[in-house]
Image (cartoon, rainbow, N blue to C red; front, side, top):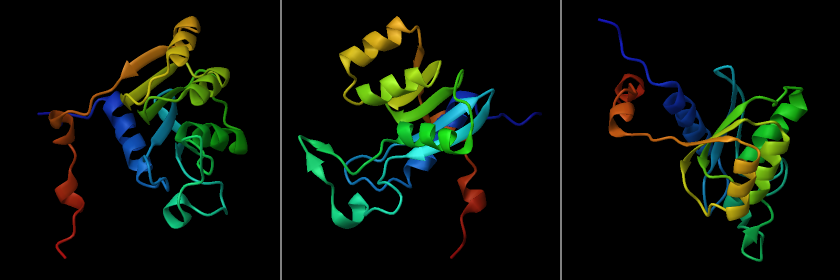
Length: 160
């Protein structure tokens, strides 16, 4: 009998969830995986500019209800591609939380063709308008108990 494999959407979303554990934001931990041709081309989490203090160390730098210190996960993933010369045109993103308006605009300009998200988070009406205007595929991915039960956690846990 063949072993059942985790579906692609859940596989890539779990990668985004894992990446989110590196977040340095006190308010919300977000992770993103950029995928093209069923291969991860970049990942990002929300946190400070490299070399700056982290929100987890010095608190958030809040102005008008937004932390100015934090770079969003989607932006960090796109910037990783820019830094290392990896094209984003035609890729899709898996992100733990629905992208904000600024990240949505950036993703569309970067050529992202599909946005996969786990949780709704202040979904902006104008972001939804742009997604429809540009005919970007949008999918909420579920991580159900059946999918999570396929993860072999006990295999990797130490007895200590």
